[in-house]
Length: 343
Image 1 (cartoon, rainbow, N blue to C red):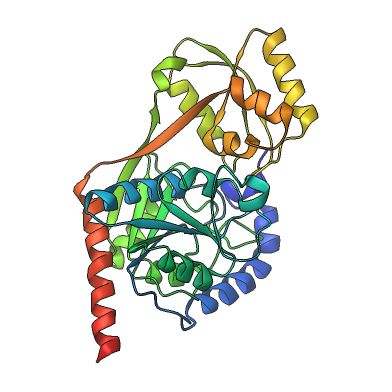
Image 2 (image 1 turned 120 degrees about the horizontal axis):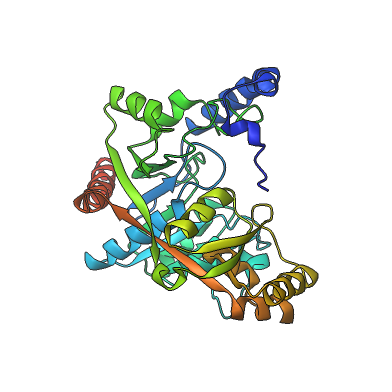
């Protein structure tokens, strides 16, 4: 199951229309907040990878792809994350040997393998800590709707299978703020996948002269799953995407166990999954985020993690040069606003 109500991603029905007045209020408040003045401008370029809706869209693998490209351009990238699901209340440099997902959330434990990662509920304080760490290019993993830190470039990621759902704002739908405001703030839109749920959004972006980038999700080392009977388990926003990725890799998904987004696995749940896999002669398979949440959480969690195969994914851009274009635009925008500030 997912925390997002299923009706959010279906054609608008009774529930959506009944809740739409509340959604309109929420969307207007969130949209007005996005227009607020920032309270801090970093000394280095800031690129935000966000999305228009709640739930997974591919932000984290996109952020990783950006960091890898930034490194090839002889810069030192750093990630800034809110650390959803974590307990740290002050800016913290993530160390996977010290922290677990209850401390910093699951995404930061993945990100820190690629670049210095700071978790901070206060985006401004987190950016300052990254600057102190010697980072010269900040990549925000989410925070698109948060106005406190000035962003030199905002890349909005869209899942082509889900799009923006029914188009209504929370709680009537998955949209985080008034779409007109969100599109006006975004510098470009990245559509992941080849399905059609994002077509209307693409048309709206084109009307506003926003560049539209395209990419696909690819499994890393997924050939090893071909023909393998698996017990798949996950606690992510869109488990169907994981299921589809496994089938694309040739895995035979015999059993699929879904938990809510950012689920913290109990010892009992881990024992049950291990026993079921053993009894049914299946190979446990999960996502990188779930594997991160199991790490360092206890003996049973570590046991499940050690025998589970992880379906790692990466973003493949249709035009790889577009990624450098986004990074160069971020750098140029940062230089322009520094010149204006100095003047």
